[in-house]
Each structure stands twice: as structure tokens, then as C-alpha cells.
Image 1 (cartoon, rainbow, N blue to C red):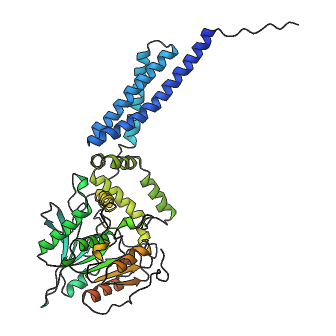
Image 2 (image 1 turned 90 degrees about the vertical axis):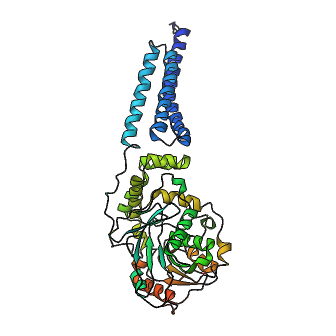
Length: 443
């Protein structure tokens, strides 16, 4: 039996199929490329323009235009009729889809915290630096010998307290004027329109302006966490203007000395807090803001304003709140004096770039007390470095306390403050070993 040979497709039909396949591929790839190039365009425009409508609009225009050109080319290869109409319809559909997705993700604002009335005790300093600083004051009991004012320096950067801190009233009763203030960019103090103004030097300058506002030759500084870092920076700049300093579970003197990090409170969380933390960190709007921070911080600020960013930071802080306690369960309710997101981000970035202050600090003769905490999430060498750097320092180990020493052990904490500032024997022995204290959670 004779088998008839199969007829092959005419060359023109084969070429036609390949052209259709190539055209469809170009259209598909063109859409993807258009989206990528549009995102790059957003970043490039945001470098020079901090108006969201302009840099986001520029990105959308680039997507639609490039999508139109690529799809027009693809439609022509397929042999379709009315290729420009098809390209216009497709590019418009892509633009509408992107706008719809953006509206429900990156353009959906994070809920801001409701406005809370400031406590009646709040007062303001309008400093010559340009900062308007909120503070509270516990007046000293009348004693014959005036003493340097005590200023509590909060952590963060950008994480203020509320009211007179633990131990403040007791110090006032012993004749110390006690102040606690919200650093610029945090709490109820000034927020800058230009977020690049948030620097370590600005915080140092504000603190010295506060000293002048009080008419004091010297200050007694009590710095907790980042407040310890800021206090160290102030002493490096003005060693003769500090009578005494207390460092409470302090942050790094110089973060560059700890390339692997200093520790953080989100290492161990229960499943509910971990889920909330992951949800907050994965928020598309916040991720976009983070990318803009690397391009132009002022563009990020315009995209996510202070009230929204501060509310997000507050929620993140709440997820790690238990990490500041030995019990891993903080029962005191959170206050309404919110963190400052941009002062945190910008000051932290600046802190990573400043010169090493330790050579200057080794020459400072300021009497120093360092409170290291058993359950502090910051690593032991961070606290120990204060003792090793300041020549006139004493370090004590506070057992049963986490990063929030005054919350976990208020009586011990207050006793240490009172005795140290009054030149009396401390209720705890000095810890002199290089090794972590027994029971220390982080080494």
C-alpha cells in the first residue's frame, strides 16, 4: 500500500503563526516592562519632586505610554486591524487596573490615632534652635542649697513618655528641679516639614538650648535607651555642662561599633503579636514609603504624613512592648503621647554616620551611673561599654528588670537615682566583670 506524503503548511502560513506568537509575546512582555519602567520613573521623579501626585502620576504616564508603544508593535506583528485602537484600549485598561490596585493598597492611608487632649501639666519651650519643645516639670522642694536640674531624656529616637517619669517626684522632694521633655519630632513637640533636619546634632543643640532656657550652668541627665546615647553625645560635645549622668539600659554609644546590631524587642513574640507585626511590616503603603525613604525622605514624608506614620510606628511599638519586661507581659496601659516616625528614621540614619565620640568620652570626668538590666533585649556589651568608656563610672546589675527598668523594678530604680544623685552609698554593688552578670538574658 502506498502512503501519500502529508502536505506541509505553506511557508507564508508558518511565518504568519510565528508573527502572531511573537506579537503576543511582545504585548505580554511589554506590559511587564512598562510596569517596571513606570516604577523606576516614580523613583527618578521622586528624587527631584516631593509631590506625590507628580511622581506617582509620572510613573502612571510612563506605564501607559510604554504599554501603548509595545502593544502597538505587537498588534502590528500579529496582522491585526486597527492596531492603534487595540493598543490604546489595552494600555488604558492597564492604567486603570494599576490605578485601582494602587487605590486599594499603596494609596490607602494607615488609620491615624484619634487626637488626645494634652495633660494640663504640659508646658512649652520655644527654643532659639527653632524647636518648640513640650515638657513637664516637678518643682524642687525648697532647700537652702540649689542643685542642678534633672532632665529625663527619653528613648527611641522618637519614643516619648507621658508625665513625670518614675522617680521624678522623689527627686523633686529631695530638692531637684525635675524636667521631662519630648524631643523634637516626637510626642507633642515640633514636627519638621523637612525631615532631613532630624539629626543627632539637632538633638544635642536642643538639649543645650534647654539648659540655657533654665539658666543652669550644668545639668543632671537621666537617659534611657536612645536617651542614653543622646546623653553620651551631649557629654562628648559639652563635658563641662553635665554634673552627673545616669544611663538606664542605654543604647549604643556609637552604633558603628556593633555591626551585627545591638538587639531588638521583637525577637520573641506570641503568635498573635507576631501576626500583627508581620501585617504591619507587610503593609504595601509602608513598603512604598520605605522605598521612597531611600530615594528622597521628603517625598516619603509627603506620601505618608506624620500623623499616619506616627500611628503606624505606635502600633509596631505595641507589638514589641512585652519584650521590654522580664515577665514578657507589660500590664500598664500604653499612653497617648505618640512616637515620631520620621525623627526615628532620620536620626537613626544620621547616628550611623557620625564620628566616634568615645575618644572624647574617655576624657570626661562626669560621674556616671549605668543601670544594666537582667532581661534587657540590648546585648550586654552595649551597657558594659559605658562603664568601660567613662573613667568615673559605676555599673550596677538590676535583677528582675528588662529594658523598662523603672517599670519592672520601680523601687530599686528610684533608690538608685536618689542615692547616686545625693552622693550616698548605692543600694546595689558595683558590677566590675567583663562577663555578663549571672542570669543575663542577652550576652
